[in-house]
Length: 322
Image 1 (spheres, one colour):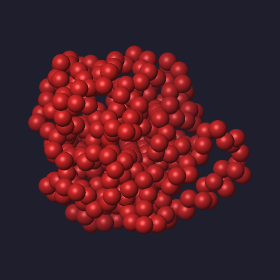
Image 2: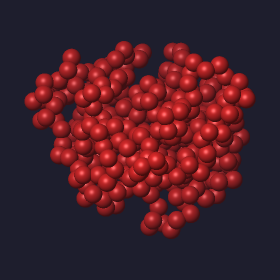
Image 3: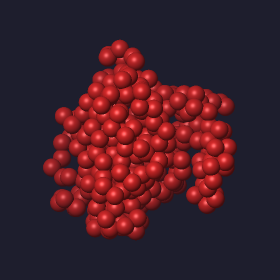
């Protein structure tokens, strides 16, 4: 059920100053909300592009749902409460060098912290990626999900073979992808400064392809002097094509999540990154393959996915908020 307009207006925080990049949809606020005794829980959601708000969809096993109307009118006070999250389509950059992104803005219990979420090969509009980003935003974070593939993600309906995949991947030059990730990082920093938050901490989450790019981004960030670094925490879910030698340059603490049955994320690479990167920790799930944390396919995977999500949430809290 859609919330009453008055209820939504009452729940929405004030807007940010006008961003330098063009934006469609609602403006957002990174201002820290007053403390709340309510604890958010997770839900699966579907975006309504016309309004920028989210509506509930089919629940995943064992997860309670609540409606936006209930949250906006403050009628939910227990552990089954969920956050009201607003969404904004963004264009970052200028002219031919611009690309799309989506911002999930925590309207209630906003903790004044930003998260950059790097998707797998299926792109920033994929429902599993959007659902996961929404869940993170429900914990009070402002989550930016960029289009790393500039409108050309790998399509699930495509028959997979090594040659086709290599040809597709060659169309996404590593330097261009890295530049887009750095542009998103600068965008987040600038937005927080514009909102009056001068010393915010940023986190980064990556899945599969995005996990590999996370390691590279944190290595670049780690080369800066301590005062100029942007990221204070990272969570890498079964990163693929990771270069373990970059671990020596990673300064932010990273939680590496993977399964010991994943052919795309070698556990030895994860263990080497754990040894090399300062403050890193590996969480290896027995019997799990690729994608279990954001695409669980069974009751058993769902339980481990929930455990991994909670481990991620604790990690982000400890390194960004504590």
